[in-house]
Image (cartoon, rainbow, N blue to C red; front, top):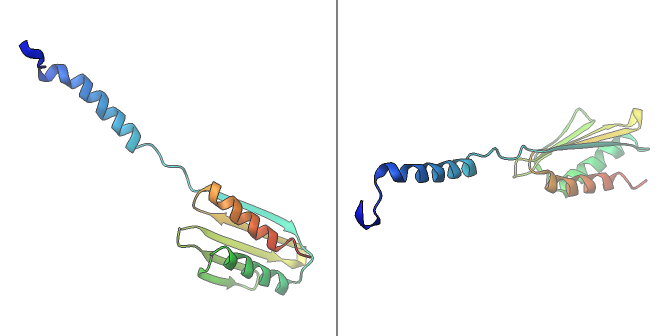
Length: 121
């Protein structure tokens, strides 16, 4: 055709490429939520461990739906759909902690702060 105009069949391949590019960008899988956990030996009583667990979770903002379960586990959530659990087993000289949801890059500092609560003798 004269004047540089294109017919529909000449435009389709370019349009298809643009649509595929947009589809790849918008429909790429999102990163999966992270889960990070750890444990350490303790020389605390069960009550002391649970008190530290409570302080650790609250200091990191896990105060939503906060509860102490069965005298050995402390659970809390953040507004950002991140959950945490600390389980104290003083009879085995052990504390276990887990943070789930959100991104690993954000959860590492939270985990470090929780661990630090149990560094104190």
